[in-house]
Image: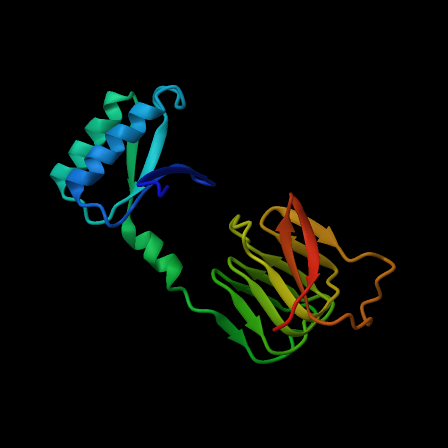
Length: 197
């Protein structure tokens, strides 16, 4: 059954998400029903965030009061912050990144070239290298554990995704061509899987 209201834990705390097809009166009703069904789930004064989808001042006040009835605090997240994150374009690098160089970007980075030893690539989003990666690569630099790293030959000195770190094994020479691989987090570890572009 489709849930009209869900609560989701994020790296910024607890967030309430609602079905966008609801009008405001339906949202009020669904919210009251949801909170009534999980009264023992929240501790008093828990702060819950809600994306501000152009609610009027009166509507914000009504929603805040509903949460206060259950001793919860509602915080509105400005909608424009979410949109900026969604429309951030990829950064394209059409060259090899040499040792001593660092490429840093808030979004995803695509490199058409190699990442040489001593080079650093740091992205808030994903990293896609159309070449060999033998430097230091860090995807999800702001804590996004759903990001990934792809390279035609993935043999980095160090690989990081969000707060997770892994190193290239000593028995895995940097010049061994294994084919395109994708690094991602699974079950709390960075794993490598074959990848077809």
